[in-house]
Each structure stands twice: as C-alpha cells, then as structure tokens.
Image 1 (tube, rainbow, N blue to C red):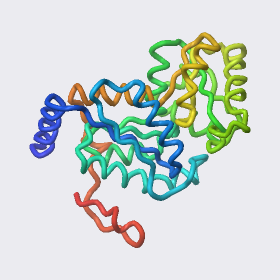
Image 2 (image 1 turned 60 degrees about the vertical axis):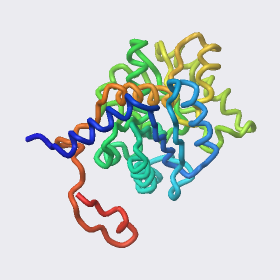
Image 3 (image 1 turned 135 degrees about the horizontal axis):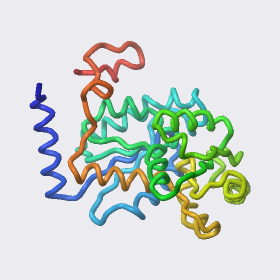
Image 4 (image 1 turned 180 degrees about the horizontal axis):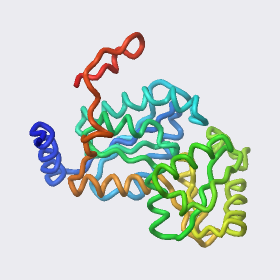
Amino acid sequence: MIDLKRAIKVLDRNRSIGASAMHLNIVNPNTTAAMTRTVAEAAARVARPGTSIRAVESAFGPASIEGAYDDAFAVPGLLARIAEGEADGADAHVIACFDDTGLDAARALAEAPVVGIGEAAFHMASLIAHRFTVVTTLARSIPVIETNLLRYGLDRRCARVRAADVPVLELENPASNARARIGAEIERALGDDGAEAIVLGCAGMADLAASLSAEFGVPVVDGVAAAVTLAEALAAQGLATSKRRAYASPLAKPYSGLFAPFSPKG
C-alpha cells in the first residue's frame, strides 16, 4: 500500500532541491564546539557550490564519545539535533561520529537520508582500494568499529583496525603529538597489514587527511568528507531512507521522566 503522505513529502523535497540550494544538517553527537568547527571546515572543503551547511554539536551529553557508555548518553542529544534539522527542512543529515552513534534511531526519526561518517568512509575506501586499515583514537573504540564493519558487510575489506592511543579531546592539543602517533600507525598499517588505503577513525582527525595522504603516498579517507559527498548524492537523486520495516517511523507512545519530550507522535 502506498503511503501518500510520505510520497508527497518526498516529491516536495525533490522539487525544493531542484529549485534552491541543498541544505545539510551535520550533527556532532558530542558537546565539544571545537570539534564541530573542525567538522564544519572539512565539510565546506568538499561540499558542492551552493550547498548550505548547518554544523552543530549536541546541547547535552558527553564531551567526547569513547566507548559504549558515552555512546548511550550521546544518542538523545543527537536525536534532538536531527529533529531540529528535519523541522528546518534539511535535505540530508550527517552524523559526525565515527562510531555512527545513533544511526539507526536517526534514520527511523528522519524523513531525509541520514549518513554516518564511519559507514561512508568504509564504502569510499572499498571503492579505491582492495584492503584498507582504520586508524582510530583509543583501543576501546576498536571493538565498536570492528562490529560496524561486520554489520555493514565490509569486514573482509578491512585489513585491521588500529588505535593511535590519543584521546579524542587531545587531537587538537599540540602537546599530545597526535599527528605523529597517527602517522606511526599508518606506517605500520602499510608495512604490516598490506593496507592500500587508510581510513581515519575519528571526526576530529578530518583536517589531517590531505597532509597524511601526501606524506605516505596512499589515499587517506576522512569520514566527514565521505559522508557529505554521499549525503549530497542521495539528496540530489531524491532518495530517502526506506520507512518499510527496519527504519519505520516510531509508533506513538508516551515516554516518561526526562525522556518525555522525545515521545513519538506517530
């Protein structure tokens, strides 16, 4: 049975995209404004001319996402920003956390397509290399990334997930020697893993991709750039997330306590 209401929304969105600039809603699911600025700059470098970008961090939640506990508390703040983007008429959303925090929930909430930077980066890397290695921040993030690779069906294309042992909030601290640590892991990946491309496993690494690619002579994929490019492509084709089964809109019901404002309307 055709959902006429949804079909009309999709047609209206397609006409809007054709008649005016594309609008992207990029959400940093943590609360660190400096990281949002890094993400916004990376997005602006690759966005199409005329694309307008709303880049925003969560209003509440963890300062960084490093492991399952942080991830759980980051989702409500993320969904609030996705809802704002939907209300503002966003043509697509990007979740700027490499763990793809809250991706399924955001796709269920939104009418516009939602792209996670982790999934986008994996797909981009698989198009330009037979095998790639992911270099992320801390070892505790490795299991999350490995699980996502399995879920996306791209685990066989990933040679290894490595950690540079740099906390997320230290990426912009010159004293942390973050770039050198990331570079050391890239060198090991090329020598030991047989990697042909590198995926940077954190949104906060976005500004390092070009210089690391030049230094090591291999493609270095930044998830923010990958997600922006794919989000624009989906929106330009008028493709929205399927609302059949997995990403069906949540059923109307009351939520209690602090979550009352998130109660689905159906």
